[in-house]
Image (cartoon, rainbow, N blue to C red; front, side, top):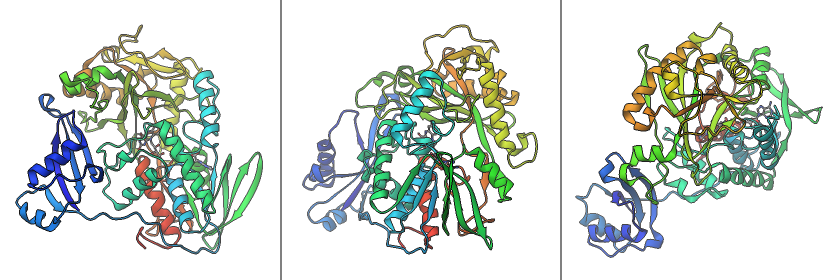
Length: 534
Ligand code: FAD
């Protein structure tokens, strides 16, 4: 095949326009549009008077070598070889491996192990995705929180009620495997080539179900409502693992446990600390969700082209360092999305964001976060970061009326150090209700100072950030894990061999794709491999 990069297309175009462009440029017959493979597609909106799409594609044509030779001066042309999808080779383990947690890390670990034929057993404390949706609905509509099944816990993990953004800054062949498996299990095909791929919570929950069913069809087992609660070792190696389901404790004998518990399994972190498993406190971030009208953001980003049906709902990524060098940045931006109530513990308020595949909601939201390091914690304990988060979450709960309403403040009032009294043109989307409370009442002073420094700077880059009506809903505290469970070069815990701390909770991933990739890596390590090709 021939690869052609950097093809510029106007907002309105068809696949035929791309193949016609290629035929003309290469002075050859027009490639067959139905066989054109899109490798990359992005929107270039850097200049509002020249917004366009940029493609990299691959195609077949007659006499490819001759076409390549004739166009050897064109730096956008090269030869291209497709790497076909392949399943991992079969493996052997004397006992069935156990995967704890069925978020992206656990799902992909279990899928790989099932594909290898070693019949993993998955323990997930939350429920299957359909029952979980009902639990989340009860919380969002009635304020009734299930601490075992919520936005953090349950099938699909923390990402199920998300935008399903699949951005990753990591350049690793395993990310291709993750995308391929998502598509094989029902995710939209375009995630393979979009520069900013996303699935949306609606399609993600179906995809997750298909992955579960595939694992089961390959001989694996997925036990929902099963909370990992302890383990036994022999000569420093894992020997058995215990879990509680419906109040009854059971034990599974195993030599390999992939511990993919996510960043909110605080009880597990405390259990590991009590068992002297080596962990380290780590950096994370806290802040608020900010909401603008999506149409205002589109205007800020696309100018007169805003509202064009071919252009996606605009997004952004901003960062700045405050005067003390502390990082402030936007995170997990959800175009056309909503702010979610994401608590997993009673009497706490936690926010996050999600969107549907169509990204067609009224508001755009994103976290605005301030970097926190262990130097900011009250003490040197491994769990000091957890307590730092918890203190903020509890303060927010109390300040907003102790009923799971979230504290909100308009940006203009926050900058002028006033408590807001009424909303302007942005209505907050947090589902349980809101109370006017300034972030100063629940976030540390240094976090508020950093936010006050950053917001005007962001307004210089994206005009709608200057709107005094933008709404800040808080707090966002679960941006990443507050601890790292230390692994050795085999990816095993340095304290317990055969226990593989995995994914975001273990401190080795941040986001859906990197967590899924880490799941693959740990699964490979468990069957004695170090990459997908072996
Ligand atoms: P998790 O997804 O947290 O999964 C851990 C699983 O372990 C959970 O299902 C939990 O129930 C289970 N578990 C915990 N303790 C136990 C136990 N004792 N026994 C049994 N099971 C247990 N990332 C992106 O890349 N893009 C996004 O758009 C995005 N949006 C997000 C929106 C929201 C609302 C949230 C909360 C997060 C979002 N994230 C997003 C972050 C992303 O979801 C996480 O990075 C990712 O899910 C981490 O994967 P994981 O498998 O390591 O952990």
